[in-house]
Image (cartoon, rainbow, N blue to C red):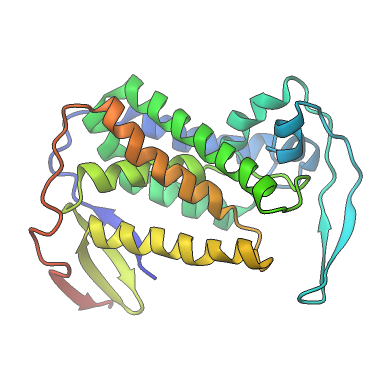
Length: 260
């Protein structure tokens, strides 16, 4: 697995204020509203619950201990609290909340690396609209996947991953040959975005196959895949005149060196 750590921003012409705002908003919500994850009342009241979106009815339920027959494991389904407003608002509020430090940190790393390039290409307001649109489609992808794959519709979902997946999809279309620096095992390698993001989406698809075999690890892969596809399609609307580069023009791995 490749872990991106930086990319080429040499063509940046504007300060990515919206990207900075999105990163700050996610961090502030996690720290002050979720109270570093300890405020379950806020977190689960504003998370997306597929059953609520599919029925339009707010669900209030106590925590429940569930068994997984295939593995013999048990896990606790979180309590569901009353949503102070329309349940459909959670499709947006959930994309600013996270399940822990690693969840937040990983998402913000990807947004920091790839988001500014998309904002530079689209402009401030179009980028914000693109981001929210991709996040909405990603959330709906997860909601409907629980229905068609017969998953538990009462497990809440949250995180910016879906919206950021849209950013990655757009990046792949706009900058397929942009240099991305990534950690691979003990090395730092430089590869085109086509490779870095191709590996990422392949990982999502392969792991998402577990949804069909009841071996899900709790990650909303349908949201990641749905957001990625949404980004590919939406960028054509938000940047209709953009011509994509020849994705096979440059060599895949251009240089690497051992980490010191």
